[in-house]
Image (cartoon, rainbow, N blue to C red):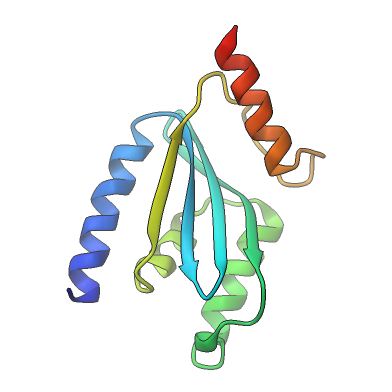
Length: 124
């Protein structure tokens, strides 16, 4: 399947996700993941794990650095998502209720704390 078809399918999935609250993980390939939370139709990048500089780093240095800047700033992930689409991103999606928002990467929450908080909120 071509990148264009993969990108279109991913974009449709993303639109469905943005219609509800939740946490989803983008698999960037090369042992990299980016975890995002969606609340009220807004996505936030909350954690990005990069085990090493990816193979495509040398060819896409500016794009890669731009993605990392979004991670550090906790900005809107729209541009990062557009970038990821070109690399056949896959999505794992989990529904969450009563998610804390706005979520910032520098407020002391780890991803595990965030997930536990949401699980506890779901039980109430």
